[in-house]
Image 1: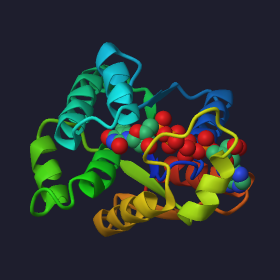
Image 2: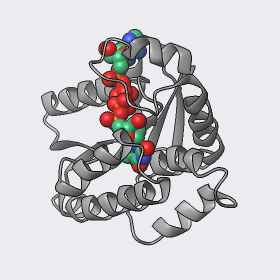
Image 3: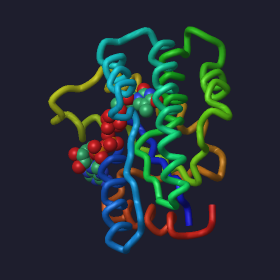
Image 4: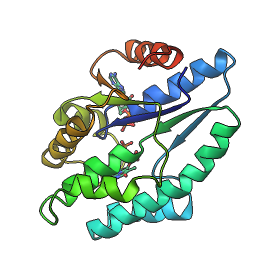
Length: 198
Ligand code: ADP
Ligand code: TYD
């Protein structure tokens, strides 16, 4: 079974809902599970939240997200050593896709640059679920939120989603139609986590 599992996708694609339900289901079956997320709730994670809201320089934003992840990995490593299952709501592909989109006109091949910055400095998940949905539809889901952040626009999320699709060719990724029913999505991910195959 897979131990370190990440959930990726554009805002409103259902990552938090599904990861929480899978966590509850695994717990109810007696598994030792941790549900964690990025940006983290540490000082550095809070700073990065501020970066997004205040439209801070994208390079600063990118470095800070990666720094937050490097710290987070130390904790994830401890949980892995304790043989816990780790479910992580957003991880490295969020940086490659979002900051890749922010930096697209600023440097040549930003995704590659961001991947190289992270290489050998962060853990590689056993499985990454990519929730795919049209930005218009995901944004409609989150209109009720108190505050939308600057990334939450159709044109930007289209670029982000294209990046996600571009970088998720490896067998580690499972692309999932996020418009399916919640129960079905939980079932697909749950069965996949318990299975050996990639
Ligand atoms: P994310 O964490 O990816 O931003 P959320 O899990 O917060 O997304 O989901 C955004 C909204 O969409 C929530 O109101 C949630 O209840 C709803 N939602 C999530 N998954 C589905 C689904 N498969 N079908 C319909 N609504 C969903
Ligand atoms: P989050 O609170 O998980 O957003 P949501 O629940 O709407 O999916 O993340 C906040 C925002 O941070 C979201 O728009 C994605 C962005 N983000 C990045 O730009 N880079 C990153 O590396 C991460 C982890 C998140």
